[in-house]
Image 1: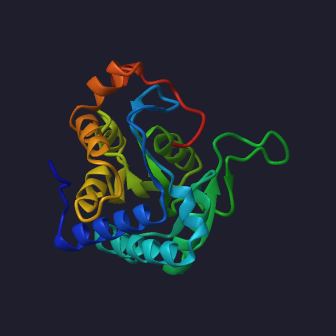
Image 2 (image 1 turned 180 degrees about the horizontal axis):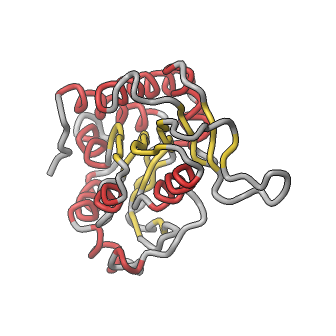
Image 3 (image 1 turned 120 degrees about the vertical axis):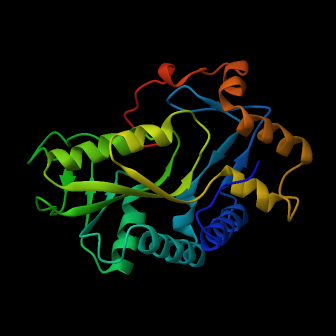
Length: 240
């Protein structure tokens, strides 16, 4: 199985992003000692998009691709303000806002407990068309909470952008779509696997186990001590 892309440009952007993430060692395969996400899913793979902030040339290229993706799929004049999700989404939101010449704000996971006790920092006027930005998404839970906070404040939030989308856990894309939130991403695990065919980044045994996970993440998670359905997923306080 390979990733499905809307166009040749989207595929090229996905593979370029995957190559960069592999080069900076943001991609982690650990089938023998699976990762446990806060939602309860077990996974042999983990992506650390926060590493991007430490590599100026890598982050510049990824942000260029991100802005181009947003322009192609949302529109260059269809966003009034870019909003980063605390905490990982804040730098990415700032870089994208700068390139789009748009105002920027950020949304908290919970009120800070003093002062205005606000969830949103910065000016987000009522009726503004916002782009919610984070580094990645697994099952979409944090995107929904952040989008709801923006909507409750009177903003329009129909689009969210991430560098990386796991693209495997059941119901995540549909859950976002059902609440009117369109997810735009640069690459997924399938793109990473495709790039791994070009160079031996990982052992063939590790790649084989990762493919098994991607083809049936629910069974893989359950077999390794994790949850076995979307209904079992624990609510999250942190952005994923």
